[in-house]
Image 1: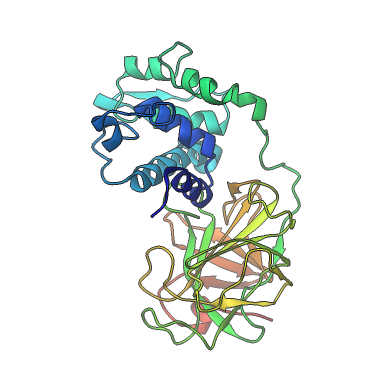
Image 2: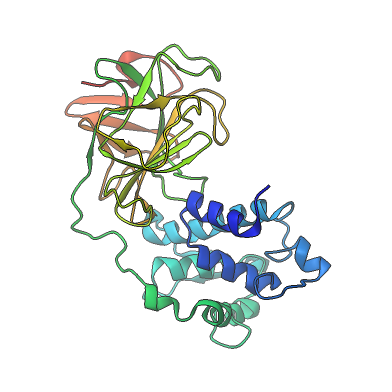
Length: 334
């Protein structure tokens, strides 16, 4: 079993949402953080009472982190500028706020009327900002704007499997972790796999050189600036990696070094595959955008729907599909 602090840290890492923000949300909606003896109601509702929430703290926090990501990445690049309130009313974001403020405002709008939302987002004693500042001080004293510099160099990566081998693009740009995050991830399957058989004859390899900074069931995170922190610089996430090929935290991997095997471990999966995504300074980086995912010269491009899309290299195009067709979705590492 995980303790409360361990759950907060786990969700913060997985969703890439600040743990201070999650703790402040818990304190604001149930008083768990500062109250040594919360009421029975508060114990069952760490993030308040809404129709969306049930179950354990882990479930509640995962829901909250995903909702915060929806607001953050809507503001960053999905073009959604409207917040929906209870009763069908809508509000528009103020143009001068940053993405984190947009995330909080959208989250606080859940189940709130217009008047309630004004109080929650205000500066009075009943506001969220009052709770946050009471715990951690001025949030803007830690602000990093922009999180992703506009002049950031493109990250050149290799296809993360052995040279001469062909894997298949089955998922175009989609959520890095759950649906709320940026469409940072691509899915690839090794040849000849049906269901959850671990692909022990098809090695995953490191797409770049760097240090293993986190290891969970089915998950390897590789830190490219080698400081061991996911909050800084480029980090690569390899998801659904079989635990039978363990890599201790701190292991340095050269580009192309064996990393493990594709499986169904870690999160929901119906077939062995690799879910691959990037973060910079803790922010999920869209696979198609100003800093596109480029793997051995293949550039990802999104479609209107998540999981659809293509990878293009010169005049060659591969289209995401649930198939094993070399000329349709096959990608050969060179």
